[in-house]
Length: 476
Image (tube, rainbow, N blue to C red; front, side, top):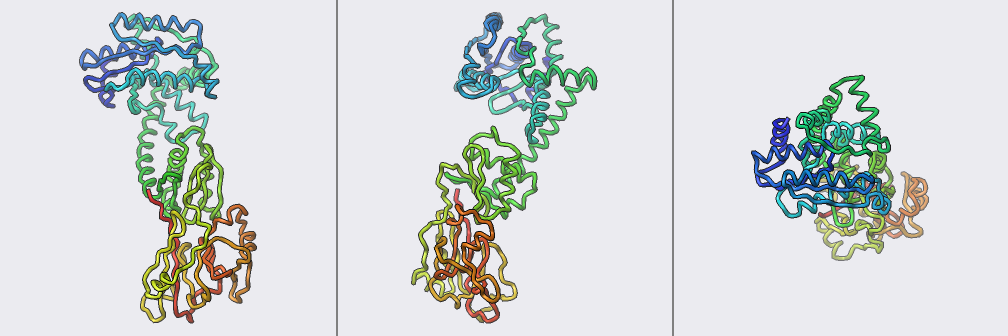
């Protein structure tokens, strides 16, 4: 048994020579086995072992467990630290479950004990624990990651006993005639995991397959291998289509839609997790809401947990906190082309106009007779449009809406007010002031990301073409 655990430790590079190993020892069978295994490992690999016992102050007899672990440490001449914390009071104060609060107290105690020492934190999860985690996540709903069970190594936390079943651990202790404590709360059905342990997993072992725990554990390993592959592809997808700025995270729609649907889901989850600072309470329904927003009207906003908002913009989605001012909002003051800018256009050079903090408009003129004008292949891109420049009677203005705005909507150049257009296309009232327009006086040349006015369309009679391209330019 010792050699099996030693091999598992080597396979996962858990311990290095000279490490300080902080062992969480409750006094139960699993943690006592962990301590004995570490002592055996220390015979061939020099390391320091320090023991931490946490009394959650839930059971009246919990002090006896602490005394047992203290005596065990005295027997093996190991440093012992006792931490006492009223976990139920903490859970009530922080609005956590008792299990969540207990876990937070334990790992905080372990990390304090390790401090700045070179080493790891060893906890006593075994194969049964991993299977219970798998079933718990399966029943509650989870992603692929949640079905991969408990990982042998996570940051500084190591789990050397994940290669053993609970029955193997008990047999090991019995063979060594090693006593251990029994936590009475583990025998109750007050916790979901105890229900899974006593009524589901045990039943599976008795009535379906004696090797059920091993089979589920093997399945977790295969799922974890698949998840590792998905995680690598997700990282590549994230880097390809996501830009992170101090106030928002932007997803480029065109690049995002090239990803496999499954990878899209994982990219969205990663975006939400980074924006929220946590994965807790982020569920499949929120991922689907964000994915659905990709096909919504420009300007549409949805609410998400952690006061997050997702907004459909001209080139994709922006995720931001409700309390943060969106850095990509269009400047409300109008931008009028100066005489110098008109002169740049007249030379045929490209003109770049800053529209907002993260947007720009590129403008260029093409003159009749030039070989690079192909009137039969006018750009149909959503954010690149061609216009008959000679029909623009006033000055080109980039702005948001004003009273009296209109556009023409058919070959007869019939007018429709911008307000009526917004109503017909169900664009919410509160979002209309943020839609970028290119206008000639009150005549809207282009509703950016939407349609252009029919009057300014190019034709075979067009002599000068104005090409406009709207771009999002989010910088890291």
